Length: 460
Image 1: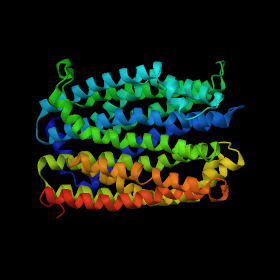
Image 2 (image 1 turned 45 degrees about the vertical axis):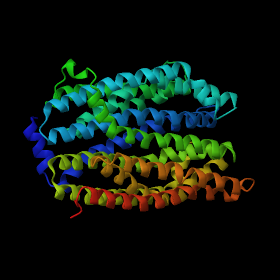
Image 3 (image 1 turned 180 degrees about the vertical axis):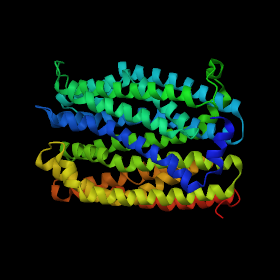
Image 4 (image 1 turned 90 degrees about the vertical axis):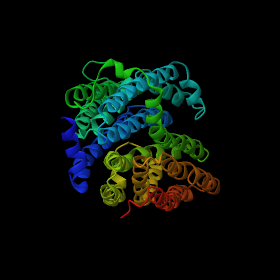
């Protein structure tokens, strides 16, 4: 596809149709990313022994896994927006430099994760539990995920490069292939099937990283094949301080925004642990279930961002407006459907994981209460994508800090203190999410109005 063909897709196809064309594959891709997070939990929770302890171990590992994804995808988001805008301006050289410098950044990111996997995992796990069995399982699982993290790091970059040029279908194929690999390998490695040794949580970790490597290799091959607008010359991998600064001017707020999910989960693990281990396990499981809904919103956001960013590069205010309008509308539809699904199937979802009666009850209450906040959460996620596309990285960061730190952790802590010793009232803690999302949505609207004034009225 040459540059004129890219313009034809990104600059002339009606925005509602273009958003569906790009968004559906991205939504599927993000939902499959959620598969990585829940398949391991489903299999380890049904291990012949210590299944619930293994599930708790994965819950404690999960915040750092989220941080790894945040840094990798956030770098990709920055490259995505900068590359899309460069192509919209017709600057193919800058687009190639953007892709090359994103790959350079990925190399550095992997080295950092590798070092943490070798030296930092035990200290991190020890801050969340004193249970020896859970500590050992979490240490084994997270160490493998960090040491062999190059799959998720490089896939995150090549996925965004494909999406930036309108080839989101290829990134989805790569994601699907990795997810299927993970699903097939999980029972084989965890339970020791077809003559292989039973590896428990280590098997879950190996299945995850192998799946990520499959996704990376396919995304790389697709990038080489179809991204003809981008030169893959090694000279473009040579670091450029100017390009890296521009990538992270957009990507750093996105990294922080997603990293805040990790901070929030880590903080909630500690807060809920003051009530009971069952609360921690229930929340960890709920969080992975609800990702199927919220990650769909993330997928649509990843379509909203390049469409609006490209239109911003073209200075086409009517397409910017359509990107905002239909982005919010489609997100609302997804969130309404997601809320209905979680409310209706809360009990069957919880039964998949072989939990004890109390933990299952807590997980069901989390699904029933927190899912009410999905509509507001979806709007906030869409607003973040809109802000990133309009060079509003700070505004995107403000929304993330509000919804995942400022409004949720203090409220959850206060409610946790109030319900200690009274398990029948534990559901009150879950309402902290609803409060946080509503307040953040109000702030998002005010920030959009401010950006509109700064850019001289694209809200026609």
